[in-house]
Image (spheres, rainbow, N blue to C red):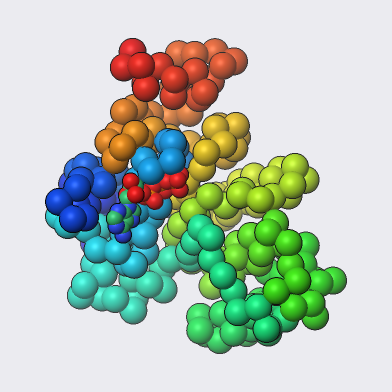
Length: 239
Ligand SMILES: Nc1ncnc2c1ncn2[C@@H]1O[C@H](COP(=O)(O)OP(=O)(O)OP(=O)(O)O)[C@@H](O)[C@H]1O
């Protein structure tokens, strides 16, 4: 069995004759964090959806903890906590009913459900209808459900979208804790400061193609205090 938590080998996606993701290979070890960065339409969400099994690759293979989605679907899914972008919860449920629903799906008890709500600062809002939640509160609830079963791999699509500065900072801290606990994280973001604060490795994408990749440290060594923003701009200019 592979020692990698996540392994993509020459994974590509073509829709309607258009290449959305060019062949991409990557590995992610336990306790490491990878950020996918790039502009609108770069292919970040498409890659994350293929990893969680929502969209299938046109070619290539994906393994999570050595498991193959096609042959070991249930075991594969159990390894992953997913935070989709722009997800709509059922608005007629309270935060507590919502998190318990997801806890049941994951075979997790009420104690853990309460714990994850507290971690994302929603314990006092648990009896509020999710329909009355702000965008940032819904994001925090989404992050909470992704963590319920303490999966080996967290797949987060734009996790800081809509978060206020306090919760943005808190999410960075929470991700650092997850990493220290040995979970692996792959996330997409437009916010290069967040990627810089939390990721070990970064992949820059443009129109489905990797234009640059490397460790955050190596980008910082190359570009100094301008860090990832300078690296991204240089990559787009092909330098
Ligand atoms: N079902 C689909 N059918 C056709 N094209 C699609 C489909 N899903 C995505 N695309 C196209 O694939 C490309 C990549 O989209 P994707 O959502 O992966 O980008 P992204 O990097 O996540 O963008 P953003 O930062 O705006 O969220 C875009 O050009 C998009 O229009």
